[in-house]
Image (cartoon, rainbow, N blue to C red; front, side, top):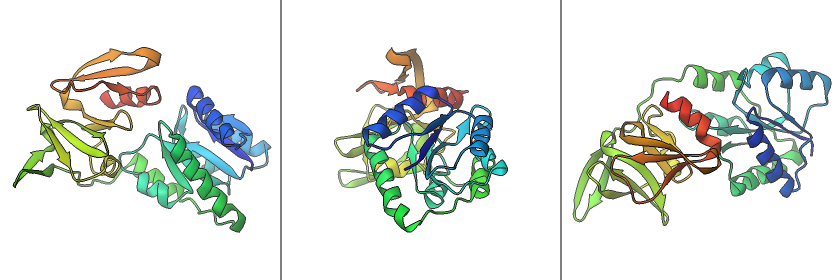
Length: 251
């Protein structure tokens, strides 16, 4: 299998390379910009599989394919969980949401291996995905949740929620009044339902509401700790791989 990684964050690229090599998937090259990738594709045999970050330091990675025709299979590695994940899923082998999880990576690799012998590589419509990223269509995001409290149903508006988190296989909304409510949904199902202007997924466990952030504190290993106005039941840490995207979000 001939594999390359296109990722502008070198620590993330090295981490993904280590993970792949532990799964006995060799990585032939790591490329870090649109310009570097175009030059590489023009001079080298194209790989079987590309791990493709969406936002590179010098532009969207789709610009590579405006210049070079590539027929390789693609697994997206992305922090764009707000509105385009379904398009990635439909138009590629798979997508991996940063920070990449070992189990998710293994599933994506196995999916590629099953498709490879039959050459069942899906064609990627870069223009359609590019439109979603650059000019996302207006869509309706969730305005409220309905939760069960005893024999009653209670409506909780998005504005009331400080954070949404997973614990012991349950998903909970913590409100500004200091109460937890069990939601009838999995955390991953909220990816496309929460407005990216209000909520950010700082880790696999937490979404936080920008309007309820009290403090942002430097933490070990180049991470950040988020302190909300009320929630103090456990630490909320922005993983190192998401720090840059988090800083962009709050800006």
